[in-house]
Image (tube, rainbow, N blue to C red; front, side, top):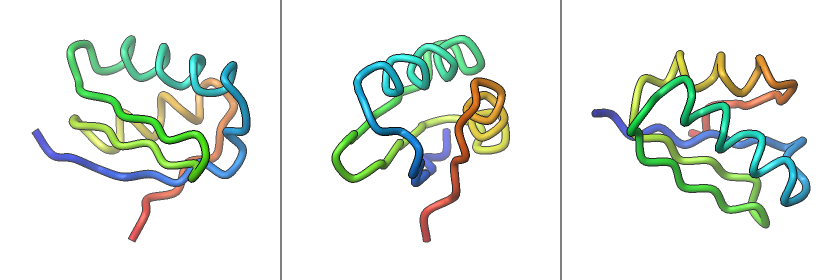
Length: 66
């Protein structure tokens, strides 16, 4: 699988983190997901487009990190 890092500026609290984690685990079952709330980073080992769509679907605005 391919690891992709996203910056999610509107992920600001534990509830946001849980919502994103749940959305990603539903969209990409079994994918590794690492979230750093303080830096607004989400690292997903799975399809980047699917991950981005899952986060957008629950109301966040992820951007691929350079």
